[in-house]
Structures are given as C-alpha cells and as structure tokens.
Length: 231
Image 1 (cartoon, rainbow, N blue to C red):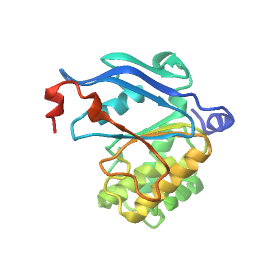
Image 2: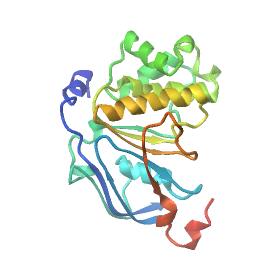
Image 3: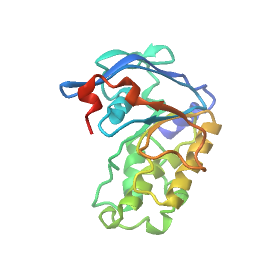
C-alpha cells in the first residue's frame, strides 16, 4: 500500500477483530483452547500469561500469519483470508526487531517503511526516530546499537502511522528504559484517540503512562496440564 492509500483510510471506521472459540497450536502441541476476544476501535488489550503459554502464537493468529487449530478469526465479521482490507489496516511488530545490521538506524526504518508502503521521506523518518529518542543515533549502524536502541528504532515504525489501524505488538516494552516506555505509551495514547486499536503482550503490567487496557489472562485457556507446566 502506498502512503496515499494509507491516508485514504483515515475516515474509515476500524472494523472489529474477533477471535471465536480459537485453539492455538505450536508444533505438535495445542497450547490454548476456547479463546474468545472482541477487539474494537479505541480499545487496547493486554494479553498476559506464563512463559510458553502461547501469547506470541496467538498474536500471529490475530495478525493473519498463522491459522488456528480450530475456531475462527474475523475482521469486521469476515474471515481474515477473505477480508481484502485487513493487511493494509494492521501493523504487526514482533519480538524480533527485524533490523538489518549493515544499515544505519534511519536506513533500517526506511526499509521497513517501504516494505509496508508507508511514507519514507527523510523528514518523516527523522520525525519518527525523534519521537522514540533516536534522532541523535539515526546514522549509527544497527550493529552498534544497544538492545534498547534497536527496540526504539523498530518501534519508530509506529510513529509513521497516522490512521486508525490495528496494532499487534509482541512485547513492545522489552529492553526499554523509563523514557522509552513513556514514548511508546504516548504513541499508543494518540493511536487510540484517533480510533485505532492495540493488541499487545507484555511480561510486566502497563505503567501509569499507558492507556487503559483490558487484560486477558491466557492461563485461563491453557490446553491441559502439559501446557500449564510449559515455561
């Protein structure tokens, strides 16, 4: 999608993402059963649970990157595979930062922007990095950045968004210091205010600067003792 197309979605209400009686498999094991979730515009949901519970796997289902063992994932009442506008209205940032070591921070962000059809002019990229406190390091090779700085650079991708969309974020606060957490929370607040929605995982509870979130504890959907004992 080109930036002009992204702007065209600004006035379109964001459809609801619905998970209905979903079971989640990883490899030869079913981790979760009976997950129900209704993710609507202006809403943030925090998926919580023990290590190995299946949080990342469930996010991938919600993002359309994997298929449920059973149940269905809907976008505006339509199965994801048949929802023509789903890919252009969702942003997925995984736990891996997906940054190329040989590129500078601004070059790596430009690559991500082009990959997803977002604005990649120098002013937009610099403004995005500045919001995450990375403008002074924009020309530094990714390989020289700390883990926290890499995470900030990857999350600067969110600052390129200006429309109501669905953000699916796997551990966005990982490796961030207090300033980084507040910067991400400010992005989340602004995104929800414009009618977007957020589905995220986090090992720690959202702090005071975070928007209000509905917590969904995945331990309640563990598929048997073998999943409950997974760490």
